[in-house]
Each structure stands twice: as C-alpha cells, then as structure tokens.
Length: 121
Image (tube, rainbow, N blue to C red):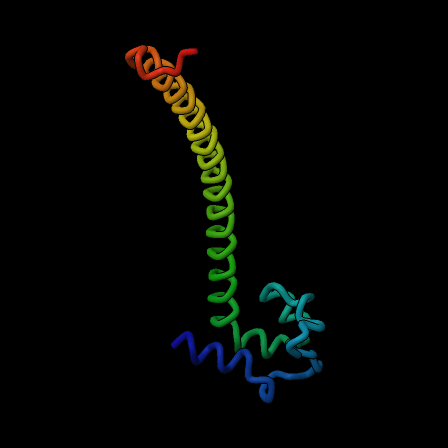
C-alpha cells in the first residue's frame, strides 16, 4: 500500500505544476529535503492536499521517525568514537608497558647468562 502512495505522490504527470530539475548533478534537489518542501515546490492546492492527506501524514510520520533515528545514530556514533579513543589510549598504554617488560626481560636474561660466553680481552 505505501508503494502506491509513493507512485501517486511522485507521479509527475498527476501533480506536476512546477518543473523541478531532478538531474543527476543534484541541481534544485538540494532545496527539497522534507515533505513540506516538496508540497511547497509542487504548489499543491487545497483539493490536492485533502486528496493526498493520508499520504502526506504518513510521510511526515516517516520523516519524524527518520529524524529521531538520525539523532540516535549520531549520538551512538559519538559514544562509539569516545569508546574507541579510550580503547586506543588503553592499547597504547599496554604497548608501552609491554616494551618496558620486554626491556626488563632482556636485562634479566643478560644477567643470567654465564660469564664464559662473553668476550674478554
């Protein structure tokens, strides 16, 4: 059923009053970002507004949900970014600690080697 709404709303032959350049370069499309923008661009009459009322309401509800999900996704991405930064900092600390441990192990190994294997003059 929603697909039928899309076909009706976007069927340029039915409600096209103002030519809108919808080319691949994105000309004039940037100004149409919401259902209200599309309604203004198409200059729908009151009769058409009543005719497409259900469709418009459904699209506005979808638009609201998209905005809500977009805000949620942006918030989640910010939190994820903070988490990854903390993880990166922790990994750097682990790497530095491992370098120190390796250095200490090399020193301990050298101290444990018998003296006869070292070159003496």
